Amino acid sequence: MSLDVKIFITDRNGVKHEVLAPTDMNMNIMELIRSYELAEEGTVGVCGGMAMCASCQCYILNDVISLDRNPDEEAMLWEAYHVKDNSRLGCQIPITEDLEGLEIEIAPEQ
Amino acid sequence: MIQTDILIIGAGPTGLFAVFEAGLLQLKCHIIDALPQPGGQLAELYPKKPIFDIPGYPSVLAGDLVTNLMEQIKQFQPGFTLGETAETIEKLEDGTFIVTTNEGTKHQAKAIAIAGGLGTFEPRKPILKDIEFYEKEDRGVDYFVKDPEKYRGKNIVIAGGGDSALDWSIFLSNVANSVTLVHRRNEFRGALDSVEKVQELKNAGKIKLVTPAEVVGFNGSERITAVDIEVNGARMKVECDYFIPLFGLTPKLGPIANWGLEIEKNAIKVNNALDYQTNIDGIYAIGDVNIYPGKLKLILCGFHEATLMCQSVYNRINPGKRYVLKYTTVSGVDGFDGTRKEAEKAVVKSID
Image (cartoon, rainbow over all chains, first blue to last red):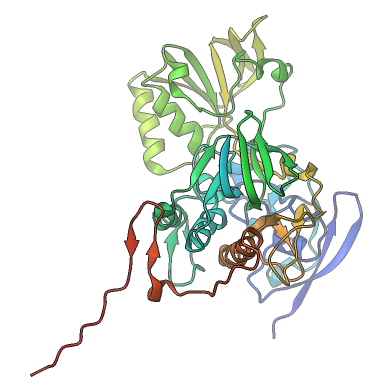
C-alpha cells in the first residue's frame, strides 16, 4: 500500500488547508483540489485536465517541486490571467511521494 | 415560431443522443447551441483527442463520436438553432414552454431538456481599455468568425496562439485584404499542419506575423481604425478594420442560471430517482449540467440520463397511453424521413 502525502493548499479565500493525497490513484493536484472541494465546483478543472483552460492555476510556494512547465502548460499559461513566475497548472502535477510537504495557493478565477 | 416536442438546449453528445431516444418514442426534437457547430466541448475543445470510456469503443476521437451521433440521429430530423444562446423561458397555461434566444428566435416545446454541459462557451476577452465600446455594433472587435464574407477585402488583426487563431488566420488570408497575427510568444500551439501552413503563408507574405507581441490599445473614434501593438517594449500602430482576439472559450452557466431552477455547485439539481426533472415541472436537465447524489460527469452517464428523460416526456405528453420499451434489434428504427432500419430476417431453409 502506497503512502499518502501531506500537501498544504491555500484556497481562493486565503484559508490554508492541510490535506492528505493518495499517491497510488493516478491523481493530480487539480483533482486533489476538487476531491476536497477547496474551490467551487465548475471553477476548477473546467477542461478536465487537458491544460486547456488554466482554471486550476496554482502558485507554488516552496521548493518541493520544480517550477519547470511542460510545453502544453507553458503555452496555456502564456494566455492565462494572473500568471506569476511560480504559476503551474495543477492538472499537470501528478501526485507522487516526492510531493510530501508541498505548499501551494490556488490562483484567482480566470 | 419553431415548434417541437422536446427542445434540447446543448448540442453535445448527451443532447444529440437524446434525439435518438426521443425518436424511438415518436417525439420530435429541436436543439439550440451557442456554438456555430454541433458537438459541444468535443467539437470545440478536443475534436482530435481520443476518448477511451465510451462502451463498445476501445478508442474514439471526440470529433468522430460527434460525427457518429449526427449519423445515428439523422433519420429523426432534428432541427438546429446554432450560434444562439437560449436566454428566456416562459411557461404557458397549456403547459408548453416558449424559449427565446439572444437573437430573438422563438421556440415552442412541450418539454425542455437542458443538456448544457459546462454551460455556454463565452470568449475569453483580453483586458483592454475601451474594448467594451468597440465590441458593440460592428465597431471592429469580434470574438467569433461567424461569417467570413464580412471580412472580404478588409484589414484584419488576429490575436492568439492556439488552433482557432491559426486556422482563422489561414482561412482569412484568402478572403481579407491583409491578415496580421499577433501572439505573445514565438511558439504556437496547434495541430502541426496548421502551424506549418501559417509558416508557409508568412513566407509567401500572405500573413504578417508579429511576435512576441500584444495588442495594447485601440484607435478610432467611431470604430476601430488601428490597433497599438507592443513588441519587445516598443510600440507600433497597425491599421485595421477588425481586431479578432481568439484566446479560447470559457464556459459559464449563463442565462439559464436565472430560470428559477435549483442550482448547486454551478449545476442544476434534478430528481435522479425518477427522470432527471428539475424543480420546474416539464424542465429536465441531463448530462454534465445536472447534479444529484453520486453524480459522475461522464458521457456514458449522460446517455443513460437522456434515455430516462425521454420516457418521462413521453408519459407527460401522452398521459395514460400504453407503451412498453422496445429493442431496436427487434422492432427496427423508423425514421421521420420515411427510412427504416431493421435486422435482417433469418431464413428458414433446409440444408441438404
